[in-house]
Image (cartoon, rainbow, N blue to C red):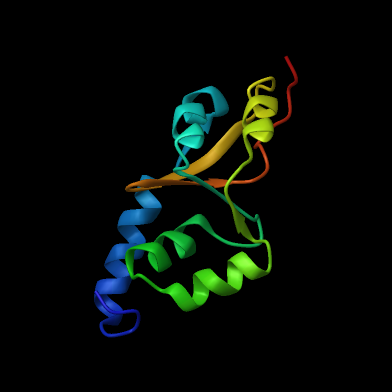
Length: 110
């Protein structure tokens, strides 16, 4: 699927990805994060937008987002720190990765 080759196909992909966005608690994401499969996404970006770029192999957009610090993989210390909170995260699985907004939906510290 090309980046802009077929607007209809991209709209369909966008709809499919939007339906796949869900909430997750960090303990459910820990194993994926420790295996380097979690990509934290700035709240300035939409998970579906990042998912589309990932599926479309849009390295130009990914490079810009990485350079601006809008995408990153959590450090091991951050992974363990997040395990101590009861935050819920908005997440999208785009195999083999899990895209996660970098701020919890609510902050309830255990």
